Image 1 (cartoon, rainbow, N blue to C red):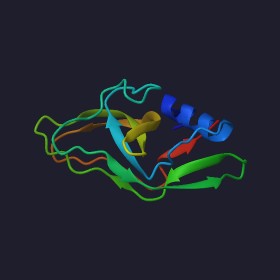
Image 2: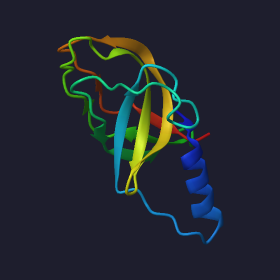
Image 3: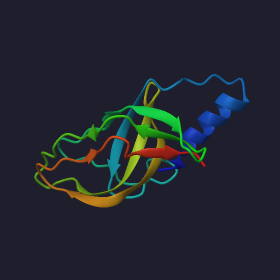
Image 4: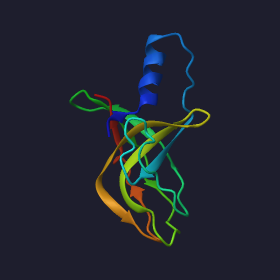
Length: 135
């Protein structure tokens, strides 16, 4: 995942290149989508079925041997079990949200393998499997 949303682009540029005040995010969450959220981070369809909530995530940042800096989830991100009899649909994308008083879509990308979530299923992103790279 290396796609920054419009919010992130504005935030980074203001933070680095101006004296504008920006609020540092205090926490991070991940949301599940059944279609591409695009650069807005909200254009796709976020899961809304019974039992679904955006789930907290923590990240570590490190430089790879090739010199690329990446952020990876430092622990598994496990969503609650789907309690909706109709299921949540097929998960195709995720969005990482920065919380700065409200959830702001910060990064988005497609999952490696789409997954149909039926009633009683869970969705989990194993530790170090959600990678954010700025190219």
